[in-house]
Length: 327
Image (cartoon, rainbow, N blue to C red; front, side, top):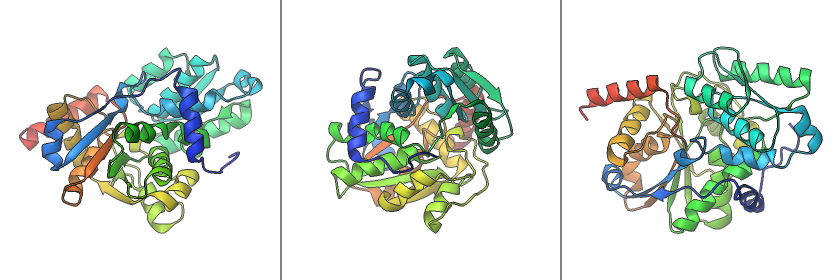
């Protein structure tokens, strides 16, 4: 990758200026039912209200807006389980850039339809994200597309950093940020902002124990592969990414794994207690907060709800899980 230097807090401030004409700040709301569940004051950052229903659009706009005319003319490409691809497709449409998105063969149909509706050429390849990623990289070498990696992109991370920036402006005395982690751009970005603005603020990443590559990489201090079996597309990768890991190693306060049933439970809690429809990855922050609820007692907690692009199949699974829970 070109320029693997991590973004700075100033890069996040610049990103905010670039994306503001296209995206308004998202709501950050408090729900009594969620406060009662976690046992403390909880603020939820509603990235499901973005135009594409997910936080990644911030990074896509920041990156594509800065491409030179020649690169824009050749086009961009990305591999994605859906949300990163939507971000790239949305930004490409905004700036008149051809976009190719490679997705796994069983990608979320709703996310695929959204990418196609935004004008992207969607190609299916392989059983999971890592197969799609390798094929996308090959296409870029052959056709000269600008490959937009899901994590190893400083401009993506800087764009995503505007989430934590907005959260701290709305509630400057937050004690903890709970951030879902798949590739790691969101947690890395939050760590950059926290490090620059508040020595006391903890950033805690949350990943599925069914796809723990980033967690194990963070623990071991080197990039490692791991099984990739989570139902939550936004958390589904069997590899970790160098640039986010570089940032996380320096700035992340803690990292917690949650079970697949924990993610389903959190989806149900958000629906019942906050009337919010979340995808599995979007609910990970709440699942992590529930797991750590004794440790979080008395703290002011911010949770990033990263997205709401849930398939009907996964929603049905969550509701059936809720029925078994007795909710």
